[in-house]
Each structure stands twice: as structure tokens, then as C-alpha cells.
Image (cartoon, rainbow, N blue to C red; front, side, top):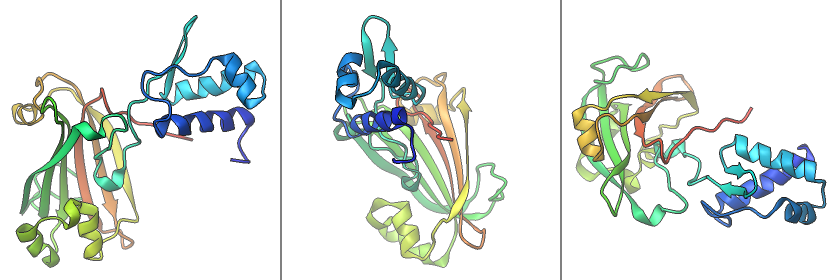
Length: 233
């Protein structure tokens, strides 16, 4: 972090503590005075660090009360098909494959024409206590002969990424975009166990191999109470 400004280094240190769970969701950060003492910097530097953490959605600052952690999970791992292990709730979440089949592409996507022969994997991640879904993911992968035994034996270690890698298919790049699903279909609402009128974060990703061929298309619906997007630039 040598190239970063002092306030950025301090923010990165606090961010690491939050993401590692050393400062949990809802916890109060140390006071400005305590942070000044800890990092041996001015109060203005600490305030710039805290402002950066607010911008990243990791904390909120309340006048007269201090700063509190609002971050409630880990960064989405796209290699895992948008499945996320929530730091404070991982033990209370489970995932389940809803369907594993071969069939025509039925989701509108410019990179993978409708009707294309695909390996189709639908998955849901849900809260154990309530059964309510927090993410619904539909992966569509151009069919390869090597997928025949996947239908019989399942995904390698339950992972699409591991399955593709075992067959020499590696994504080296791609494109992803985000939007809002303002009204769920009755089918999706029933799967997730929520009201059809609940808005959901909608992510779409196309992964490509070195020769620019499509490796995988994924469309995900995510509970906005648990998922968000974060960009650094």
C-alpha cells in the first residue's frame, strides 16, 4: 500500500478488519480520538479515512454517536457464479441445485443466441432458518460432449467453475452488467419465497475464453438487503 495516501492506508486497514469480521456488522468503530492515537495522525486524516469507508458502503457515521459498521458480507465472488458466503451468516445459509439439464438457450442474451444447445444449471441460495431465498442463479453453458457425464454424476465438487476447469474450459475475460428486476415472475417469487412485488438486484455475466468463445452466461437475482455492487476506480 506504499503508493496510497496516508488516509487511504488507514481506510484499507480498517476495511480489512471489517471484511475479516474483526469488527462485525452493527459494531461501533473506535472513536476519532482513539483512531488518531492508534494511527498517530491528525483528526482531519481520520475523517478522510472514515469518509472513504462511508463511500464504500462499509460504515455509516451518525452525528454525536460515532461510526458503525454497515457491511454485512463478503465481496461477491464471480467465479462462484455470484454465490456469496456472508461473513456473519455463512452457517445459516445453504445452496441447492434446482435443476441440471441439457436444453435450448431460453434467456435473451446477445452473446448466446436463443435456441443454442446448452448445459443448464439453476441454483438457489437460501436462509436455513426461514427457507427464504437470497439468490437465484441461472447458468447457461454452450454444450460440449464432455458434459454428458455431468448430467449423470453432477457437477465436480458441486461447482460450475471446477466442472469447466476439469474439461479445459477457462474464462479469461468477459462482460457483466447490472439492473433491477422490478417485478418477479410468480415462479421465481415462489422459488425465493418472497412477494412478487419485491425488487431484486439483477446481474448478468458473459465469460469468454482466450479465443473469444462464450464459456458461460449467468443471470442472477439477488436480495438487495444482502447484496450490493462496489466499484473502485
